[in-house]
Image (tube, one colour):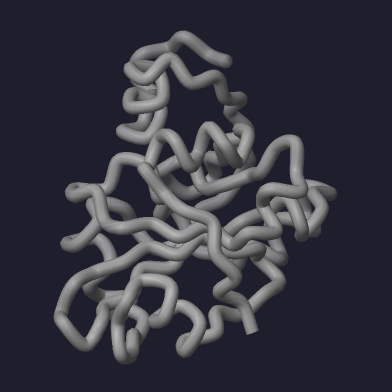
Length: 160
């Protein structure tokens, strides 16, 4: 883990503050590439590589879902998991203003606001999972339990 102050993202600062251990992995990336391509490029298993989706419920409340990069969200299961009648994904153009992160660099840790966060329950089977680190070309590797703690999240089955 690098101690260089200038590369710390909000997510890293929060993990440091909570004394949660993590590893940082950086790679060359100048524009958004989907998670499966990144996992392929870095030889990372899909079941350990997670993407962050931001959704809005019928109530207008926002939610965060963390699911494997090769899976799709099941909107009915996801809505049920957060107690909504229905949910839809937040439009890409609204991600940065809502979360503080850009598409491809969006991580569940350290958003502008702590939204209710659901992590796909298959994450529990992994010793470590890989999530975005808060900007393009940066990943955080940590235990799923540490992620749950950092975001006050819950495990649920929310994939199709």
